[in-house]
Structure formats: C-alpha cells, structure tokens
Image (cartoon, rainbow, N blue to C red; front, side):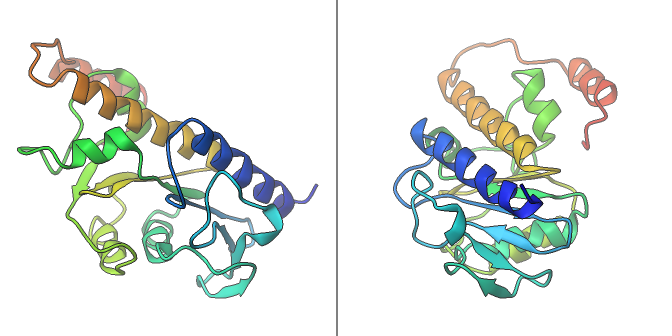
Length: 214
C-alpha cells in the first residue's frame, strides 16, 4: 500500500473511532496529514468524521492549494498555520469535544496554560495548552493567532469552540488530543474541590525527564 493510500485509510479509521466514542458529533471536527512529498490530505467540509470515504478526502499541494477530492474543511487556514510554524508537524486534529469546549468557557483561566497540572500525561503529550480567543468558524484570523505563537505551542484551545493539536504523526496527535479531552474532563470534575495538583517541582521533573517543550 502506498504512503498516500495508507494515510487516507488512517484518517478515516481514526476519525470514525473519535466519532464513535463521542469525541466529535455531526459534521464537526477535521483532520489533516502531511505526506513526505510535502502535499496534504484533509477531511472535507461539511462531512461527518464517522462516515468519511478515503477516496473523497481532499488533496492539497505543498502550498495548501486545492488539487482534487472534495473541498477541504473551512478550517484549512488553522491547519496551515501549524504546518508553517512547526516544521516537525505531520498531522493536525481539531475537535469540538464536549469537556474541552466547556473548559474554554470557564472564567479566570490562565490563557497561557489553560489546563491545571493534574496528571503527568497531560504535560508529557501536550506541554502548555494556550487559550485563544473566540473567532467565527472558518475565520482566517485563527491561523494568524496560531502563527503569532511562533511555533511555541503544539496544542491550543479555541474559546467556545474546541481544541486543536499538532504532532509528528496522526497517531501521536490522536493520543494527544484525547489526553487533552480527558484532562478537561478531570478539570471539570474537580472544580471547587481541594485536589492535590502536581507540584511545581513535579512538573519541572516531568518536563526535564521527557524533554517537553515547556
């Protein structure tokens, strides 16, 4: 199987898994993958992630110009911003997952690190998660906001919208964005409780031991 054929199958497989487990609903959410020749595969606009067809995925050239397949998600500029600012990025996933969206609407969040340090895996797989302001869906300004981070974050949370995560490959990104959703769930479950968060020393030890971009 060619690299592109496998990537098409992987996108549809992971998208369906996320849909089936309630991480995305309706026609929300989108995925992109960068191939070794610099071109991209991207989920189409207005399609459910639970019912994607490999042959209908959008294909774009290295400059994110449309080549063939169904038309790409309107969030393409958001994906492009991660690829442009993080050279190591091989895949990007954006979801409207419930707990992450709920956390994005809480008052008094630290916009530079929106998730409290509750588990080591949140830190290991995501680093600091930046809260970005609300933008209209499809607004190219979302991409501008990501570019403004100059590649310093692999994960962001769009206010009242949902998480976006970039990583070296699709499996890594899928694991990371699911970790983000679990961390958001824990954050909501422990609201108002006196929980034992990870200490600053524990956080620093995790960052050092696992070479986290912090």
